[in-house]
Image (tube, rainbow, N blue to C red; front, side, top):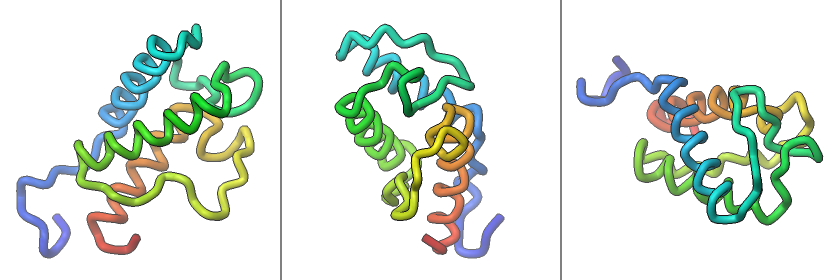
Length: 112
């Protein structure tokens, strides 16, 4: 446990973050009629993703709102130097989840 945090703050589980991302994508899928097939390795950028620029921005906004609500994490999820390559943070749901877990933990430690 990190110094200064109560015992109620648990470690962030990657699978819980993946579930949150999946729920957000399901919401976008329904609201924007995207016809996405969601999987852990689904790309979130590029032509194969099925997510256009408007849907991508909505996804980012919904994820940031979810992080605020669920984890009291207020950091933007896109780094200033993000290059949006297929091998980067948004290359798959799995990689995004790993990035978000790290972001949440860093904010809790006070290093963001």
